[in-house]
Length: 468
Image (tube, rainbow, N blue to C red; front, top):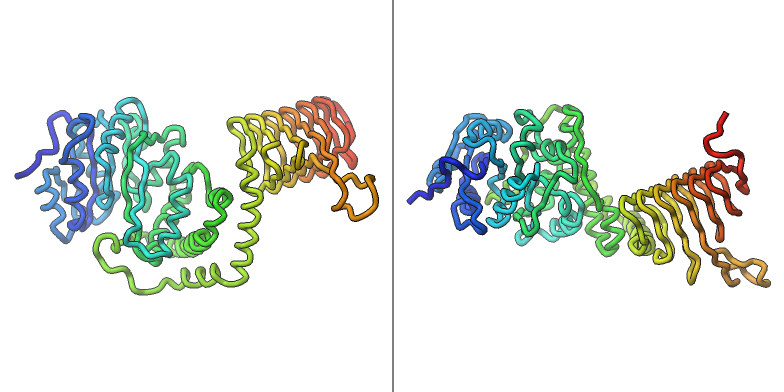
């Protein structure tokens, strides 16, 4: 007996583009025809069978879905056909890939969020690596910790838009990445992930399949920028920050970078050659994985596991293990931006005010026992600035400097200051609010507020705002 999924006034529409998905379509639709926690109501399920050569359409009808058949094997064409068939355009729309396993409660939470005023919403992904190789599990052990998959998620197989959110663009344009296109229309603050809402992605089973999947994603992102002028605003943490917090993932990072770098080169070649085939992963659909070895990936992996490369990985792990932990210990206000390459010592004695920016390669070295570094709100430290609240007391006696005691004293950098590239500030110095210090200067004495200083040692050359 058929289960009726659509009613006259559905609470939401679910559009499922399906190309030869006979093996998965019934599993996909089960969540839509089964019990609905929280009483979130009926949905209008539209399966768009596009260019199918199997019985996808018949299986979808048997599951109670409304089926539209088109001859063109195109996900974009299917999405547009599904949009055109929506019966309640004022209600939320959920776009769902047939290979995604969606949590019923997650679907209800997404619909609730959209009806409560969210523009775009999606559940958070969970990964099924049970049938994946060890190398694939290593790759995804890093991927699942990235900001893309943990914060402000929208895509990867399922996303929902309110009527207002859907109005941000017209038809889906002819591109590879519909997820990326939609993602780029919403800021991180506009992408809602309702608490407790999840869906499951089965990862590719082989590293070669992972590589091909990454080519498709990378090519789609490049196409999105080149042809449509759009970029995805992806929140952190990024891979360097993940590695900084978990240096033991250095082996996973090696595989992750090798796959992504090789895929980036392959995606670039495909774009230049005008190749835009979908290149989906059939290993998760019961098909055999492609036997051919991707030469670009093999070369990248050989480089990734070479002795010299592993020596570099060890140095990187040591750096992040030493400095990354220090960064996490810093007391910081909201909106602070800090490069992952900032070197930190004794981070528990460092504080950074709201909205401050700490550039690449800066050194923030607080004292071992008492010397603090306090950086004011909206301060700007250009690359390679060094603040050290601890110096060797070279007058304390004879012998090697490293064996002499240290002299520790607090450093204070005022609010709205700007320290140019390669500025050095020594222990015990205070720089007043709004002061500018020119690049390459060495600050050995206090500087008042609202001045411009330069030199070695730095001296005041004028008041701020009196140029000319």
